[in-house]
Amino acid sequence: MKKSIGAREMIFPNPVMIVGTYDKDGAPNAANFAWGGIAASEPMAISVAVRPSRYTFENLNLKKAFTVNLPSPSFTAEADYFGIASGRDVNKFEKTGLTPVSGDFVDAPYIEEFPVNIECAVLHAIDLGSHTLFIGEIKDIKVDEALAADLKGLWHAAQILTYDSFAMSYRLPGEEVAKAFSCGLKFQ
Amino acid sequence: MKKSIGAREMIFPNPVMIVGTYDKDGAPNAANFAWGGIAASEPMAISVAVRPSRYTFENLNLKKAFTVNLPSPSFTAEADYFGIASGRDVNKFEKTGLTPVSGDFVDAPYIEEFPVNIECAVLHAIDLGSHTLFIGEIKDIKVDEALAADLKGLWHAAQILTYDSFAMSYRLPGEEVAKAFSCGLKFQ
Image 1 (cartoon, each protein chain N blue to C red):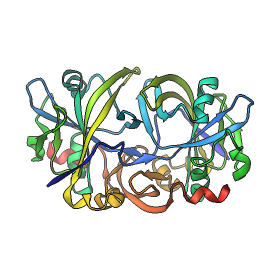
Image 2: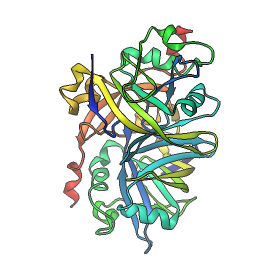
Image 3: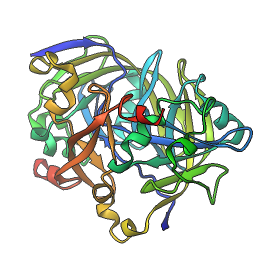
């Protein structure tokens, strides 16, 4: 039997996207966004939903550039803090001691200590109501050197966090269940 | 040290969204999409990136409605098959023996056996190049009755699958690391 729990903005899993931007004074900012994902292949693109009240919104419109930094468990508290404090009030890199590095391809800072950094150039900003959906073209992905040797094992080796919006918690990636484009062949 | 692995359409985690639609003859279809996520709160909305070559693309444009069905591990092979076969060639519900149920709010079928079903009405279809990003307003979420009693534990209890695009595999949700809006307060 099914039970309706009403309309809610819920899906699982959500990514933990720490979005890096520069502000009008050139100060680096990092903020936590869970809503978005891959949006296209040509151009390679990523979506991030941002409320106009967020400081990141201002920076995205100004610089048309951002990074998406994916945290491993050692940086859970930092990632969470990036979703609590605002770059309007405080320099979150100074507070956490993390290192902002200027992107090679876009005018946005990435977080040196995080295992995966994605550089993006804003292609579209689509007003959906409460949120604007920023579509960024992926210009480059950087990973910790130790992870680059086995890209197939990347997500698991880096233990990239997932956001559970019902429990309001961060989760590790779990065990592999089966291979895609493979386990379903039995129905053909 | 960082190493560039070039531009790729990669993020972690990706959802395993089994999108249910009706075709022009009223036949139910289900197809597997990993690219998308929550897009807004008001209206509550979800994004799904769909190539124009997919049968689902035709159905979405025709019916302006879809469901997102999230699989638990018992249905990994079915979920995978939904990404291998095309509804143009075969009725995938018949092949898998799963049950299509007409949505209460939109003209699209949901999958009775899957633990979470989200009914969506198409609000926007945004051409991004290789993919069109469909933005669906969430009209209702249904869950298995046994899951409804503890919504905070929903994702973990249902063991909703995650797609790992580097390994091309399905993963379970992993352990909880920390609570959001909480573990980061130490930096304030």
